[in-house]
Length: 124
Image (cartoon, rainbow, N blue to C red; front, side):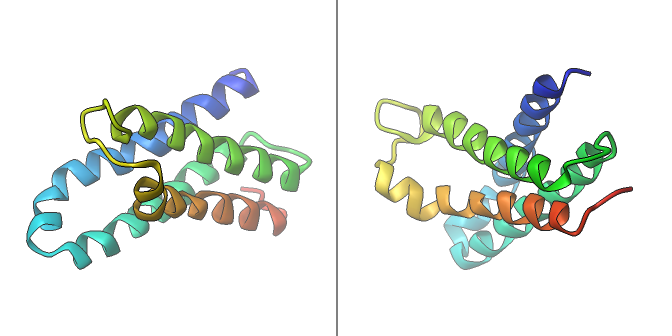
C-alpha cells in the first residue's frame, strides 16, 4: 500500500475508533463526567499504540522521521475531522477554544506515542 494512503487510512482509524468508543460511553459523560474524561485519553493511547505497531511493521529505516510524520499527520487528521463535527454550524457546536481545551489537546498523545516508539528504533 502507498505510504500516503497508509498514513491517511491509519489516521482515519485513529479518529474513528475513539469516536465510536465515545458514542458508546457518552451516557457516562452526562452522569459522571470525570470518568468519561479519564476513559477517552486511555482509549486514544491504546489506539495510537496499536496503530503505530501495525504501521511500523512496514517501516525498515528512518523510524524517527516516520514516527514524527505519522504522529503529526494523525493529530491533524483527527483535528480536521473533529472540526466538522464540533465547531459552530455543526452537529455538536463548540467554540474552537473550548474544543481545543476539551478534546484537541488530548490528541497530542498520538504524537507522543508515535515519536516515542520511533525514537526507540521500534522494529517488530
